[in-house]
Amino acid sequence: MKVEQISIFLENKPGGLSSVTKALRDADINIRALSLADTSDFGILRLIVDNVAKAKEVLNAHGFAVGKTSVVAVEVPDRPGGLYSILEALNEVGINVEYMYAFVERSGENAVIIFRFDSTDAAIELLLKKGFKVLPGNKVYGI
Image (tube, rainbow, N blue to C red; front, side):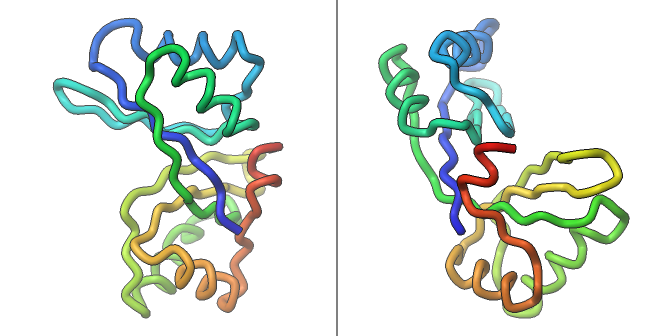
């Protein structure tokens, strides 16, 4: 039920993001979701792609520092309170969200929220027990 995410450390300068996306395009790797956080000197680009191993290999070959992390994808109805219902369940047992980002599959239907937790296995167990739909990696990579 875990999803592999890659993280790329980028210098905060013009063309950095473009270089990553060009390398992935040239290798025929599709980006399924992304998040970019920056500081004045560097940024962290987090990506869910359709081929993690190939993306990591291609980006390393282009000189990028790439890490791999396990995250959790949860599908929720695209309506007010969808995110709150997940956070409420996590708060009840003290599981912390380190970061998250989301995308919508089809407007008005479902959103997919990508979470990084301080206790991933416990979070997955809790979410499944509470009836939330935790997506396996192969489903997320193909969305």
